[in-house]
Image 1 (tube, rainbow, N blue to C red):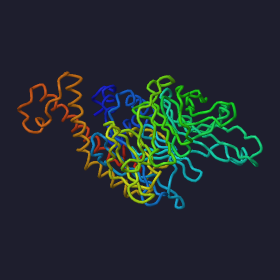
Image 2 (cartoon, rainbow, N blue to C red; image 1 turned 180 degrees about the horizontal axis):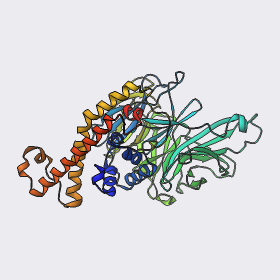
Image 3 (spheres, rainbow, N blue to C red; image 1 turned 90 degrees about the vertical axis):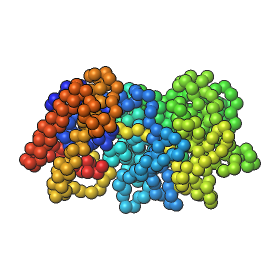
Image 4 (cartoon, rainbow, N blue to C red; image 1 turned 135 degrees about the horizontal axis):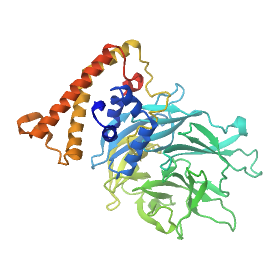
Amino acid sequence: MSDYLPEEVVLEILHRLPVKSLIRFRCVSRSWNSLITSSAFINSRLTRSLSLPSNSNNLIVRHCVDNSYVNYFKLIDDKNDSFDQIQNIELPRRSRRIKSFVLIGSVNGLFSLYEQHRYILWNPSIRKCITLPRPCITSKTHGSIGFCRQAFGFDPRTNDYKLVRIAFPSRINMSEEAKPPLIEVYSLNEGCWRVTSTSFPPGITFTDWRRPATSLNGAVHFAVEYEYKLGGPCGPLVLLFDLLDEVFHVISLPNVTFKWTNNAHTSVIGGSLSLLFYYYGRHADNKCCAIWVMKEYGVVDSWTKQFTVNLNGGVEIIRVLGLQKNGNILVEAILSGPCRCELSSYDPKSEQVKNLGICGSSYNFHVDNYMENLSLLDKPNETVSERRVSRKSKCRYKLDLTQNFSIYLSQFYLILCIYYCVVVSKHEVPNLNILFSDVNLLSKEWSEFLSTILLFCMLELVNINERLTKAEPPCSTFQETRAL
């Protein structure tokens, strides 16, 4: 059908389609497969999605049930208070010895995972993951590494996803001076690790080891504090790593008195950088979580204390996880037993807690906004599905394509009708029931247009049948398509 439409019209239509349809339409023709899997199309679609007002109501929830070493992911619809579950998401394949991944971070629906010396990027939208090459900084190349702090982020200025690794060398004894950490960065666009010459700010220690760093505005953000030194600076602050310049910067907090706590982490609340402080007093009535939001990014005076969550109300709350569309706060609350928790909704006005029906072990929940994208589609590597597609399966897939192609044509039919209304005739989209009930109710102009579209569909079906008869599949990536 693309032979009869201008290229810009085809691109405009494809940009508006969901990811699942785009994956299917790769098999329409070789040219469509090349277009949809091209880096230019993937980047332009992502840029378009990020430029539009945020209208996605989907959240992705990670939790562990009974066993803290087995992760589950669920896609949730947050458009109303019912918090309906859309689907369970299949994890990437795992080695037999390892049952769990360490979540480094997620951004734009792309996840960074770690599993026994392996770094993995995973896109649930297309059910594909890639394994990254081994880092440059290891114990063999740079001496003993004590621990690493890792972060995953996205730079909209270059449309590049980057994984940041901060490696702290080990100390033989505590009396010797600590060596400065080594910094290396993996760039998805470049496809390799690179050791940077940037220096880590001295006298700073992390307070958010158990939580993923926050990606926002082309930088990753950590909750840190100054190491205690008599007469030196003290107190909490935010450390950011700019993904474009690959340098560290410090964001100070407002000139107010903070209660000291070594339990703080960064987050994104309502699209703004946030810092969460947990206070656990000696008495049960002293536990709370203070949420500070930076209303204007980079402006210290714009820090505002927006919420205070009571952690010891009628239901004991362990952690704050995020913000819902309705203004309620997602929290992790104890349901029964010391390690049995449930994802819950906290109303900051009434301080009421409502269980949302997702159970798990404590301190293993993670909630993030979710959007579909095509990232990794142009990267040749392993996919989530472990099934091998045999020659017989490929033949069966060709038959499925002819049987289901009428569905694809009907989708194109509706898309082109809407395009004609909005772009060509600049009229409102008519009631689609009319299109299938009484053709006589349509105007002459509409009847001619729909007849033309049906003719195009018939011609395209003939072309597809000819290709299948010659056993010349238009798309060679059977395994990835079949996995969907």
